[in-house]
Every structure is written in C-alpha cells, then in structure tokens.
Amino acid sequence: MQSRIARKIAGEIVLSENPGKVMKKWREIFGIKQSELAEKMNVSSSVICDYENSRRKSPGVDFVRRYIKAMMEIDKLRGEAIVNKFSSYEKKHDAIIDIREFLEPIDAYTIKKILDCAILVDNDLKKKKILGYTVIDSLKAIMEMSTDEFMEIYGLSTQRALVFTKVHFGRSPMIAIKVTKPKPPVVIFHGVKPESVDKLGIKIAKSENISLLVSRIADEKTLVNNLRKLRL
Image (cartoon, rainbow, N blue to C red; front, side, top):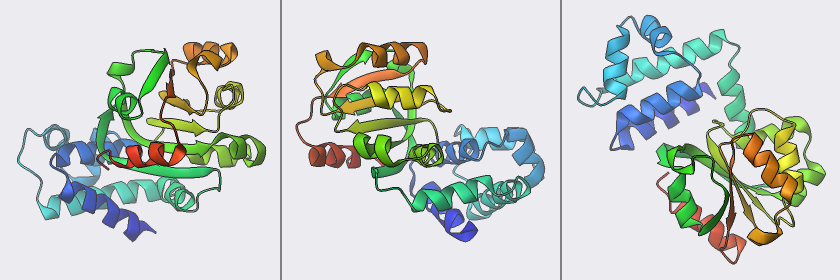
C-alpha cells in the first residue's frame, strides 16, 4: 500500500502545473509540519517552504522522491495512520457514490457555480479552499453507516465538500455532522428545494462554520459528471 500511495503522490506532483501546491497539499494531509519534514530530509525548513510556495524552480525527481519517502517514514512512526486511511478509502461504503481528491486546492465558490447552487449559509464561502469532494446517498448513509463508516466520507482530507443526494429536508445529515468530528467546510444538498431545508440544519451549519448550499441541478448523474469536470 505504501508504494501505491507513493506512486500516486509522485504522479500528482509531476502532472501538476504547480507542483509546490501539490506537495504542500500532501504534507498537510499527512499532518506533518515543514520543520519536521525538513529535519527528516536533512534540509532547512526554508527549502521546503520555497518549493511549496513556488519560489524555487520545480523540484527534481530526486527531491520529490526524498520528500515522499520522508512523509512515509514519519507516517510509519505514527502507526501508518494515513496509509491505513488510504486503504479504507479505497474500499468505500455503498453509500458513497463518488469520492475524489483534487490535484490542487480549489475555491469553494467554483464548486458552487459548477453545481448551480443556492447559498443558504455563506460562512465565508469565497475564502474557503477545497481539497476534494464526496457525493453521499443520504438515505443509505443515515440508515446503514456506523459512526466509524461515516468518517470514511472524509477521504484523505477533511477540507472537502460533502454533497448529500436524495435529501428531503436536510436535518439528518446535519445532525450526523454535528455529533461527529471533524467538520467539513462545505455541505451541499441535492434533491431538495432551498426553501424546504430544515431550519435546524441551517442553524447547525451556522454554529459549526459550515457553508450550506443547495444544488439546483436536476439529476444525480449530471451532478456527479459536473464534479468530475473539475481539475482532479
């Protein structure tokens, strides 16, 4: 599994027009500080910082290899938390319709536009960056998922948009989010009219600093296809 993750990370870095952003994204997914990674690589923190912020030319193959290897070694010392998370991520629950990670952070407002969303709770939507999305069958999630299985919807990063389909009023998904940690920055409902969304769900979104949107796209297939058009 380690080698598969390493190849995935390397591929994303190589394919990206901004490799530094991708490197930073993965370092943050692994929950590693720049100083900790720099020490493991035997370089200064400023070197890591410069590459991640594109102040140096694109990193060479050797540096990328060392960067990834250092993250893997740190994760191993922590009990392979991210490797194990990636393993469960690949064996997704039936309630998860689609789940993707972006190559680079995407403005949350971009997702709002591509899904033709009405904003119910803003909570600084335009300032939020999203690292991925998950489309969830809300009925299956509420009826079939355990608490541990519900955490699978966050994929490799909690900085994502959770898109719930087959929503009637939106109370149940928001209560499930309320009683679990972490919290997503953006939640999008599909299948319900904006004026029909439960007031408690809106209240929870406000109190938890969640941007709550409702997609006006007609069908689920189009919704998923539109999301897949985003640069992954």
